[in-house]
Image (cartoon, rainbow, N blue to C red):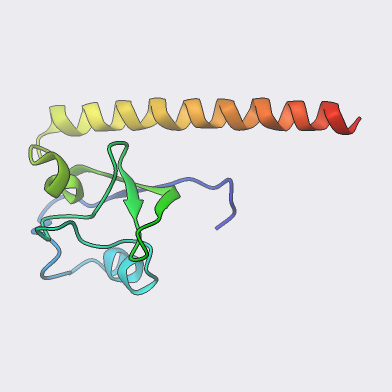
Length: 113
């Protein structure tokens, strides 16, 4: 994945926590150390914006979670209104981040010119 790439991890349906992983995506994230279960193993360990926290404790800049996988942090995260709110908040977070990156790139190009 490139440094500028953003990904959103959405696990829906019958997600029942991290004790029994049936998702090859989640299994891969755990094996690579890109994600870890929250303290209660109800979902993934994430920050307030949904960014995944890896096994090393570092916050991902590129991987975000929505929906039931955030249950350990948000608890109420299975109904459509809650997931819709998460999606809107995450979209705003990503848009702000991308706008900041564009400004930084523009300023860098000006300095180099």
